[in-house]
Length: 86
Image 1: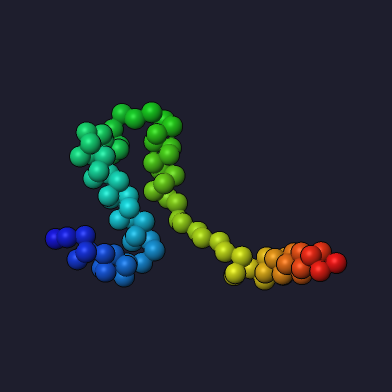
Image 2 (image 1 turned 30 degrees about the vertical axis):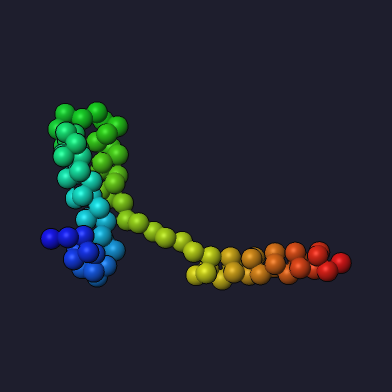
């Protein structure tokens, strides 16, 4: 199976499933490179990081979805335009 055949299906996955796929691919590539990120006798810091990654949900913030940010950007643009016209 080629990447071109897989990408349309990947695009249809939910956000959570895409994150799971990233995790799966990371482990697979690490294994191919001779590393193991699976739980073994890792340091406490490595275990904590892997646990944090496993429990993390990706959140994307955009000023386009925040009315206060939109107003602040609008105010800055008006002020900048006023300063250039003065």
